Length: 331
Image (tube, rainbow, N blue to C red; front, side, top):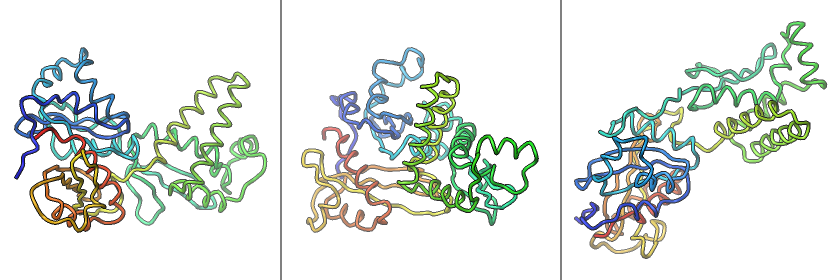
């Protein structure tokens, strides 16, 4: 079987420059295939290539770089998904040059209380049994900021029947026209389920409030709204690296070499032969996407593995198999 390890003349910096400008998780391997370091990035290309020039504040990683012989990465749908993937990978096994197990964010959930007395969203650390819950999300402080933004658009806490006199006065200020709690719950549920139109409407609402605050030169209020916009984006962005369902499965993506750019979807029916492409196996354990492995593979074998991938993972697997092929070093 052909080896994917880099040879002595491989320019790993040039390989890193092939990465997309998208969020994701990257890792460096040595010439023997051992994982040296795993990290996450908002922009994979910018972050990975910075290791060859911008390590003045991290001298221990400067000592690592001469050992890097191979670059691998998984492109993610969002920064939040990349944060979860990095955390899951590092919790499974900590490479020798990593110092912490995947960031400092705390995993939390959002509990949606639809009761008539005290409706609203609450940040919790574990999903309560028998109650409507969304998540998990990373970062308790950021998620609480997102709740403030969502309650600003959907003033559910001010629609409850158990408000004190002071709360009723505040509700009249915040919500001059009473709103139907059931309608607010339904709208908020659509948003938290990431309905595209509902999410876009929330963003438009918060942006309009921020711009109005700027127009009135209420800059502190505008800054709070901007923080809420970013936090809501974090919570509502696509994220499949960690789910509530405790699922276990392996799924695969296959792609031919970067020169032809033929993906697994185009490889079905190709006859067997020598390793002409790259197979990526992704591992989900207890609902967490926690690892991926790259190896050379023939078109026939790769197409068979990719065909068995569940449809919900097919685009993700195919896209990242093509990325793995682009990062494939000279053989």
